[in-house]
Image 1 (cartoon, rainbow, N blue to C red):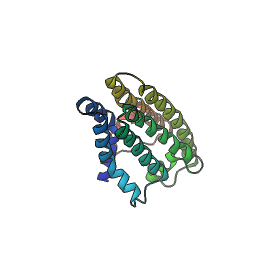
Image 2 (image 1 turned 180 degrees about the vertical axis):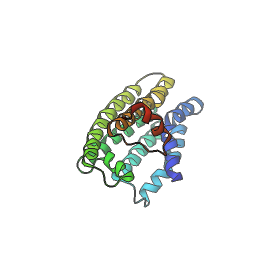
Image 3 (image 1 turned 90 degrees about the vertical axis):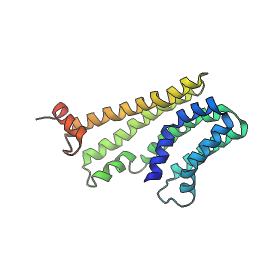
Image 4 (image 1 turned 60 degrees about the vertical axis):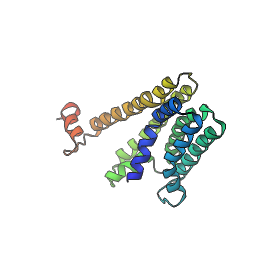
Length: 200
């Protein structure tokens, strides 16, 4: 669990780590630092994390390859392209899941195994919508890779990208609660939403 938390924090802090690293160090040392930070996930995925999917392995190898490229070539562009690769891989993970059980449905069944048919249809549709969201995010971080300012790049692939994704996530949550009228009495967010979007 703590390993996953660490990986998530490193991934979220990636733009800040790059910005600080390029300000105080250089490309090569920043890339080496990131390789060390991402190393835990790489070791877990390669040496026996049975929960690691093929997409995780691709993510680890792809990210490691870009960071190694930055360290070898001393080129900043490799560091800037890493968020684009990660966004594209999320797109691929969601798209590939549509061949079977959509990834959103898998998440939903973790909380409710006996998912009703209308929920199943909603999950498939939502997975398709997330594909469009990831396309938008991929376009954003790809365009950011070519901006001259390091600070603007970090702003675009960090806060702007996170607000974009988080805003959709929050909006979909409210819409879902309003549509299905399923509120968890133990969830403070649901308790707040019930009088706002709940039907009497």
